Image (tube, rainbow, N blue to C red; front, side, top):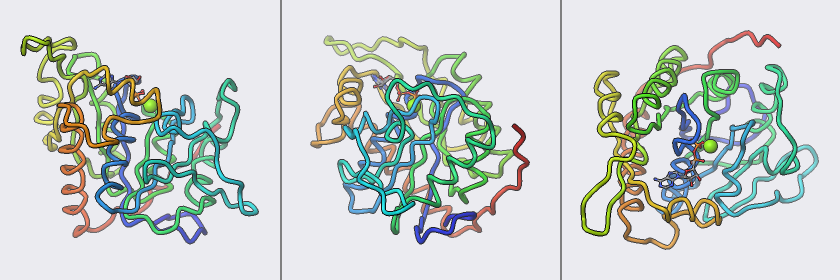
Length: 273
Ligand SMILES: Nc1ncnc2c1ncn2[C@@H]1O[C@H](COP(=O)(O)OP(=O)(O)O)[C@@H](O)[C@H]1O
Ligand SMILES: [Mg+2]
């Protein structure tokens, strides 16, 4: 449920996808998990809160929003998922620089001024880092939980750990860690550990949070994102699609487990900018 908004939108659960680092597959996980939840009959929205490099709409194959109703933004819809992204509100080449208060009001608008309707899930794709956007999302939504995405490699783990600790400080329950680009399957059946091995599971173990699974490197995942037809659309049996299905299921299980617990309230923060 939105804690600051006046809109009639209602979110039974909201899940933020985060990592300290860019390029690790946050948006890919957010988009594919959103589609999988929608495929299972749930009503799902995807809020692209990566206000610096919004691209969820590209991955969903959407290039414009429907006309607004007065001041109310109407989400686009693709592959069964409602989506709103800064990338649909500004020109594709416009650089996006934000001061704290502007960013906060943009994120607040994405929650309060969008006609999301009643959603079983609002998936929130966060930008990399541990800054204003993360704080604003945590303040604006009573997040059910956060998912941390990382590569197996040490440099990614270090940044992911910072993202995880920020969730802890903000009292956002951590649903678990996803390891992406875990290995490349070779035609002879062997695996190449392009980015090392086991880092995601180690991070989850060290932080005492669930490990939600690993996704192999797969050119079709990249192609699906670039072409607006994510890998899980069409029910392929590739290892990457199977991995994403099992991760979506694990996320839904963790969300169900949180549902019985008290929701964490909004966190008062002072925005300086
Ligand atoms: N498992 C994967 N295999 C191949 N390409 C991937 C995989 N996961 C993500 N990608 C690609 O890597 C790039 C970065 O992923 P993205 O989801 O945009 O990362 P982030 O949101 O963390 O910046 C995208 O082009 C995406 O399609
Ligand atoms: Mg992204």
